[in-house]
Length: 184
Image (cartoon, rainbow, N blue to C red; front, side):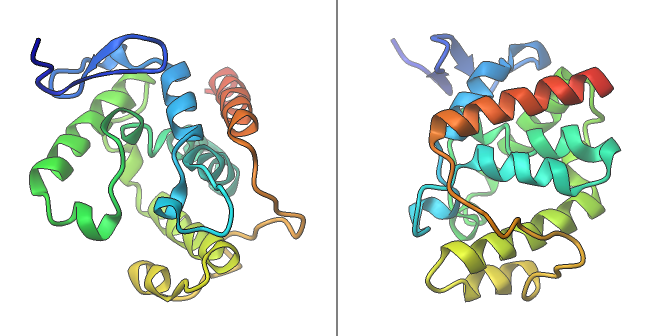
């Protein structure tokens, strides 16, 4: 059996990355996959999941953009993740990811461009730089990628920051989503 862009998800479904429809995205799969996927491709001094980053980002943006912030990396739950420097070498991958992001946005009632909002991207870049300052032994390449050191007027991490175990990241992601869907 050839899979042709299909993959098995945490829920046991076979997800077709190439021909996904907006209704194909299960939030349980997004939460679980992102909670098990490390930011900084595992180079951090502790396990820091994409789900934890998404929760932080959702609190750091204006309320009307919080759902988009939480789900911004959701397509990577189904495609896997590549370092940004490597991803740029594969335009087909980036193109497919863009299509999948649009379908994901539609599936959650967001505009297809929701994940590409300038303010959201700016805050996300500065949050990544702050996270890099805390978690990477050499964060300079992150600073270079996002345009400099973090702007603490845009976002600050709690002084009591800690790494969440994947189970906590998954739970907090789902709780945040439930809260945002009630408001949306």
